[in-house]
Amino acid sequence: MYKDDDTAHAQRANALIDEIAELERQKVAAAQTEARLEAAKRQLAALQVTPGDAPRESPPGVLLHLFVFSATATAAYLGYTLLA
Image (cartoon, rainbow, N blue to C red; front, side, top):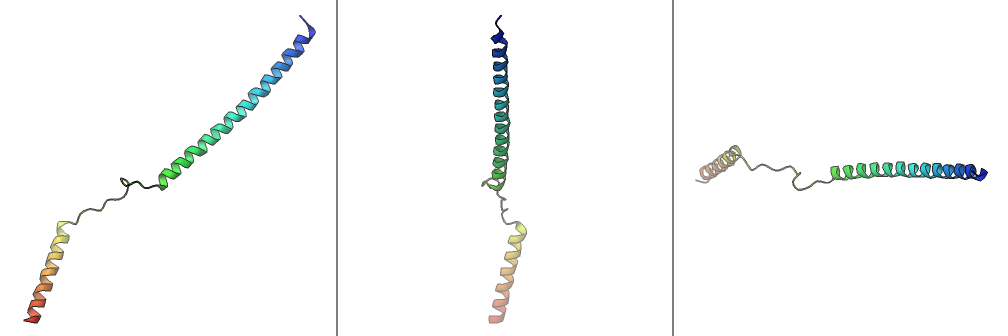
């Protein structure tokens, strides 16, 4: 075995350690970016209102119809009584 082999192995090991460290930093940065992207998507979805999510207005009920009919009938009766 040559004396330089140990030096070459050590250099290669150090290069691999540096490469792994850089790749791990990139992986962490990508995970942080992905988390920010998901948070932004959730916030945007919360701000957007789709037509299906909008509150629906209920049709007028029977009581409202009776109230309007009675008010109209009362106004007609008073108008007829005052004019006649």
